[in-house]
Image 1 (cartoon, rainbow, N blue to C red):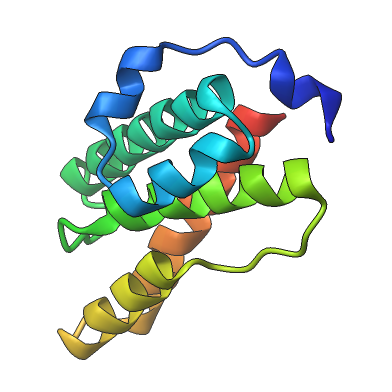
Image 2 (image 1 turned 180 degrees about the vertical axis):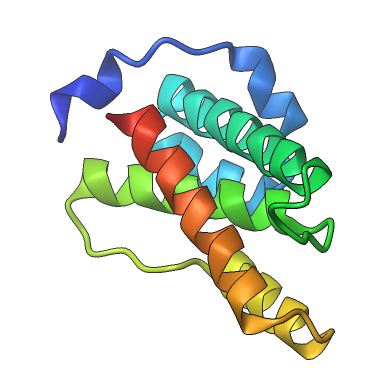
Amino acid sequence: MADWIVTIASDADALARSEAPRARDAALADPGVAATAWGVQTAEQVHADLLTAEEHGELLLTGHERSALEASVLAMLTGLVTGRPFGAPEEAVSQVRWAARQGMALDALLRTVWRSHSGVQAAVV
């Protein structure tokens, strides 16, 4: 296990704000309550940054990014704790497919994914 994960400080109340309950519930076993709550909080913050970027005309969002982002963060944390390989969870893949089918331009979709990844990376580092 990555020792730094068990030292993550978080607000357990974040668990109630989860928008990806299936991913949240799966993550509670590994990496645990504190890290899962941190993952939910991180997804909230990164999503808030995405909304700000949208307000400034930098991104185009569909309104469904938050649950996909949260599921992705929790999958990453679970993979780091268990040592198992992890990929994009179904919630994230479904969201990207849905956005593309709704006509979102590929460059807008990629900017959203890249900005989400960068925000999570900054929070982890």
